[in-house]
Image 1 (cartoon, rainbow, N blue to C red):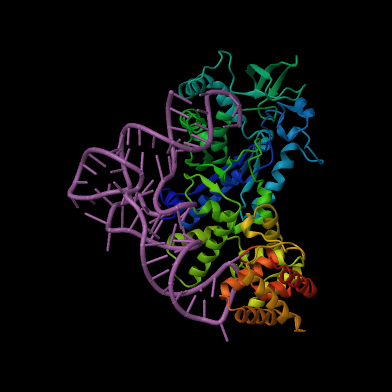
Image 2: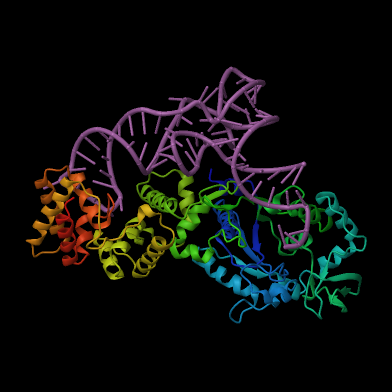
Length: 502
RNA sequence: GGGCCCAUAGCUCAGCUAGGUAGAGCAUCUGGCUUUUAACCAGAGGGUCAGGGGUUCGAAUCCCCUUGGGCCCGCCA
């Protein structure tokens, strides 16, 4: 059984799936796995005939932890402030919105549509107030759980609350000193003493308590999370204990997922530069394929993503699955995967991606590419066609391995041919030069004639021609290929190689 | 120090949570197609399922150990 349905089939009743992120920087493909895993589980629960809703939390009240490599030095003064209170590196948005908004757009394109909830608003609207009060009242019990599970020791005057200093704006530098009438008094390292209203966004719970508190107030029943939270004594363990023994709420069913690695480079991190931003993925990958990369394997496996030839193979595989489905030859699991990968578009209207990656290297004009790709008799939606052409161009430019790329050689550029192959070129030049027609069919016919009269094996003859034009042994279908080039350029090139006897 | 994941054909992996004759795609080779969308069709070769032990009538699959690769936690989130 497909992993998503297998997971869902063990559940009963009505569900709310939740995931989220602290928008502290550019959101990359590795982060997509979290929300995708949530989406897959959400949809799988529905497939199993149960009701499900899906929420995505943007932890915009989390503090900026440090000056990340992509930030200017001047951000030093913002370290410790909530992300939503800091200006974005560019533009007029807040820091958190600057990073989360493009990601919300990315999710839309990926057909992921959770309800977006900003954690800062939960505090502002007082939704967490009661649980904050409960946490403070039961702080010894919480302290005991945290110390027992994580093995660390908390100070005697520890409070399960981080006030936001109303003077310096930091949420990590004020120390809670007391609690009465719904207000936490604090002393900040900036010298300011004040009070925070726990029913307003004047402070926050520390993560390990905030997580289970959010489960309870939002009614979360299923939550996927990365292995960083899932380690023994990690925040899921403590969250579960706090949720069940302090808040009296059953912890959500966990689903731990592995990371996405970049093939040959390692785990994706926003700080190390080893990553592909989520928005950049969509520049070269159809959204269905992004879904497919994540949906096809169980979350417990790490994904070694290869944006080069591995990516193209994946696209092929996906397109093949669609053909098999049409023929009714697909087993249940694979059918489920395709269903999960849907983005609401008709697969019939989507052109062969591998073919496009070739065509865009022959023709710089998108109209020509469209004409050729449509010559198979199918009608493609102009929008999708345009989008896929852009993707193919981006892939060739930024991700394609050398094998998949070619360059048309200059008229007087050297190439490596045997004497026999050179004769094929002379013959081809002679045949083409005598023709006035410059069409794919005519060129294809001419090349066949030229190779035949040279006495070489057809394959060797084609190698000679490809070596001459692009310096490689294979290439795109010859007739269409040369017809797309300027006739005089091709003839000059053939003439030069013909005369260039060793 | 602790936890998790991975190891199956040259490559990428499926099969493992129902224990029952080791699979797919790519690559290679053979044949076909008046030689191609870097195709397509038919067929072939190719594996001590990392190693060892255990349970079992039977183990790639379940349990234990070892080796190798990788990730996470032990600050914060």
